[in-house]
Image (tube, rainbow, N blue to C red; front, side, top):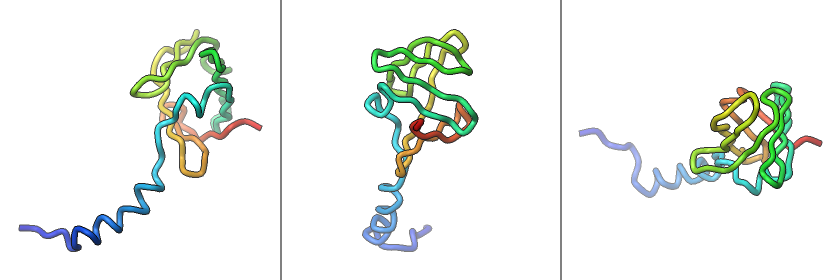
Length: 103
């Protein structure tokens, strides 16, 4: 039989800083009416009324789903995964880059 190597309380305490510092899925409030500038050069514009635009995938719409941001544009239909990092920046595997609100 293998042991954990720490008491239950010690193990839970050691995980506490990790869980509070992890990324969270983006919310509609994080996106509505905002632009995200990605490190790959793309700029995602999330209109407050559900309109979306990007120089890479074109014009269309965005909506939040339980699995991510649903995009329907002239060049892409699918789920855009965006995680909000603890420092307020964003990360997307689909975009293959990091992003932040455009200035």
